[in-house]
Length: 151
Image 1: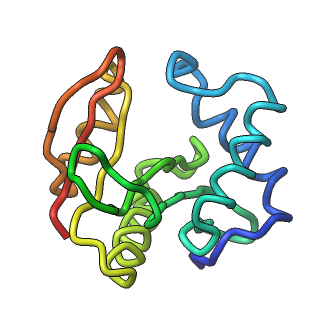
Image 2: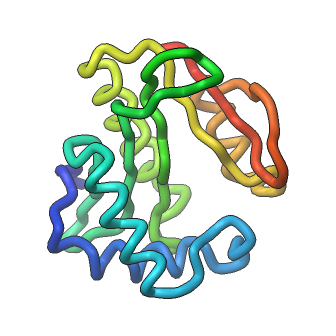
């Protein structure tokens, strides 16, 4: 598996994999192709060097780590994991962990000492995944919970 920086041309794969990965979790996702494309473009504008794609012949998952993100909770810039998803047929095979590891390494390279993310309160599978990686529950807001990890 290769993990490389995402490029503008990856937008089609991003949309297709995002749609598949969020089936059943639409409460926490953009649901139209237009919204997902806009989201991809927004992520790339926020921190183009922090967006990575896992490839096995073709793209199979993405992570977007934003090191320009100012956390009002932490009072400083953090490594904000805006997005992490893997194509369903590749889940539970280490792809998500490899992507998360790359995103956290990127945050460290940029001098961030805290990683932060928001995950759906009811998305217990994702919450357990992040806990396994050392993220701790911080607080909640609506149907989201914030998790943090010291880097």
